[in-house]
Image 1 (tube, rainbow, N blue to C red):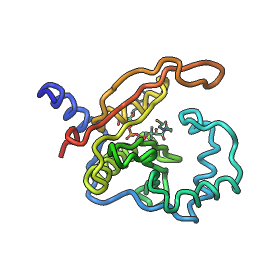
Image 2 (cartoon, helix red, strand yellow):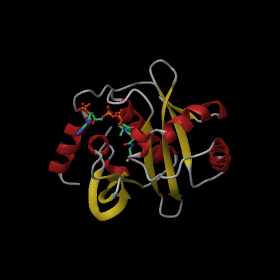
Image 3 (cartoon, rainbow, N blue to C red):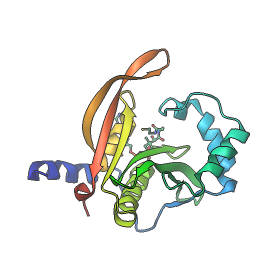
Image 4 (cartoon, rainbow, N blue to C red):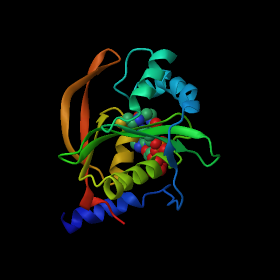
Length: 188
Ligand SMILES: CC(C)(COP(=O)(O)OP(=O)(O)OC[C@H]1O[C@@H](n2cnc3c(N)ncnc32)[C@H](O)[C@@H]1OP(=O)(O)O)[C@@H](O)C(=O)NCCC(=O)NCCS
């Protein structure tokens, strides 16, 4: 990577509002978390930004959770707020163990715009590269989702391209931005 690009990344990493945390804020999801997660997965303010359309029942939601157990292509974590309660969910999916890449997704059910998303994404990236030995993380973000673009760019993800009219939401097509982060681009 060019020195200029590195400099830009470093600036994003130290942007306003970010507080480096010494403790982990990610943990495994538990059955007890399911009611909160179901509420968030029905919340229009979250659904707007995700590739999720149909309303979920608790039955389907439990099946989704059970399907995660032992699935080596998906890894979901709870994001813990400073009050120790669950605040959101972050995940790796489509984990490709041959190419060593995975898709990242995240949402917060509460405590948005307080730096929690940034901290969670940084911790998940470190886990993906340092523990799982992945080479690349990627994500897709709707073009109208400005906070999420800020989040990924601040965590060092680069824009790799724009997928034109890739999704249909709220009665019209929208572009989707593809982001990528390589292992060697993560700054200490
Ligand atoms: C995207 C999301 C996870 C970000 O988490 P978060 O904890 O709110 O993010 P952070 O506070 O760490 O950083 C977000 C940044 O975006 C900024 N932001 C907020 N609204 C913005 C806007 N309209 N335009 C540009 N930036 C914006 C915030 O101000 C903040 O930057 P700052 O700290 O310099 O002020 C959270 O907003 C969320 O759950 N959104 C709904 C679901 C979603 O969009 N998921 C991602 C799908 S790809």
